Image 1 (tube, one colour):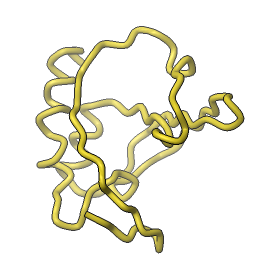
Image 2 (cartoon, rainbow, N blue to C red; image 1 turned 45 degrees about the vertical axis):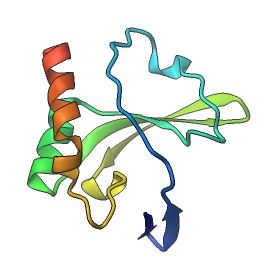
Image 3 (spheres, rainbow, N blue to C red; image 1 turned 180 degrees about the horizontal axis):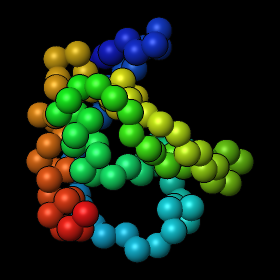
Length: 108
């Protein structure tokens, strides 16, 4: 389903599965293909869950993108509008199960 976000058309043709695995390395060591993945965003699962439940506010995020085969790290505050949620989706319903599982596994 396509979505217009901030005057940019996002073509969502992907099917995705979510897998949970504990990563004990440094987030800066991620290697990903920028043609496939625009970046990695790290947030606390409980904060994201609360953000999605309330529908408003901001939480801290660590964002890793790549340019010229080098990772670029940016810390910023993000809102619910920064997450990819289609117009017929609800962020809380979409992500609650996986976020609750992350909280359970990591005991945040």
